Image (cartoon, rainbow, N blue to C red):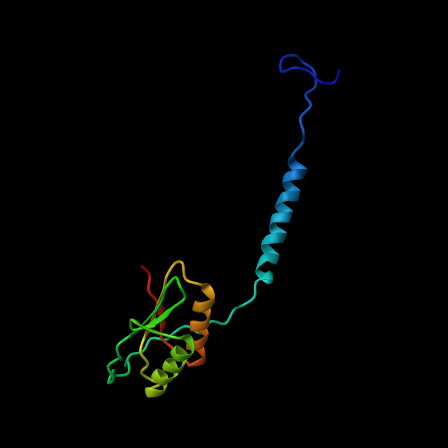
Length: 137
């Protein structure tokens, strides 16, 4: 036989890994050269440092508390209103002073219907409310 155990004077059957290592190094170099060509730049507008911030002359209005309970009832500052009335109230708040809007703090119950929350957010978007936050309990 051509194979032998560790002791003895016969030939050893070892695999020559040198060509395999050469091929792997060539593939590594090819991937290293082509990888930067596959990336593409993304334009991101980052905020710039302002040496002179604009003065705050207006005090922000009190935030609006909007609560949605599990039954789907919407409360505007702890007073229940139907959803179309809430949409009108949002538009009135924005029209008072579009540059100094109140913060809309939405507190949705964990059991609340997602559709009601989606309608409230759509109404806020249609009213052009800029400051919307979620209250986490």
